[in-house]
Image 1: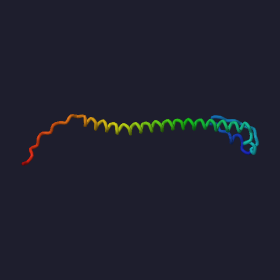
Image 2 (image 1 turned 180 degrees about the vertical axis):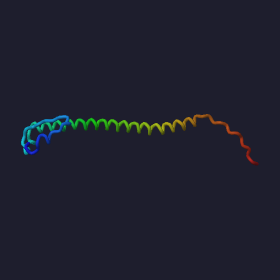
Image 3 (image 1 turned 45 degrees about the vertical axis):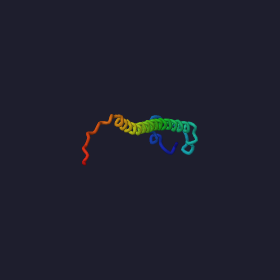
Image 4 (image 1 turned 90 degrees about the vertical axis):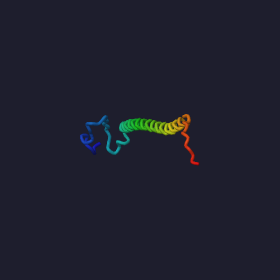
Amino acid sequence: DGVVAFDSAHMDDVSSEVVVASEHQSIHRNPRAILEVRRILLEHLEEVRDEYRIAERMAKMEAQNKKIASEAVPAMLTSQSQSRVAQPNVAQPDVAQPN
């Protein structure tokens, strides 16, 4: 663009690179530059959406597990109290009453 030398603007470890011949003041209006920025933003959006979907699924599973656990404890307590009630009464030994 005449402001920054290519060697200074170039990076070796990038996943993509598009060289657009344009002036510094008008690069933002260049169709090729616009398409490349759009492509990168859409790619990033898909990554973020995937991460969101995973986090959303994990949150739903955690909520279901908490619900199951909260329902299981009262059910266990209820079944324990019912099993106590269902047991036959054991006769207590007669205790002599004082006269």
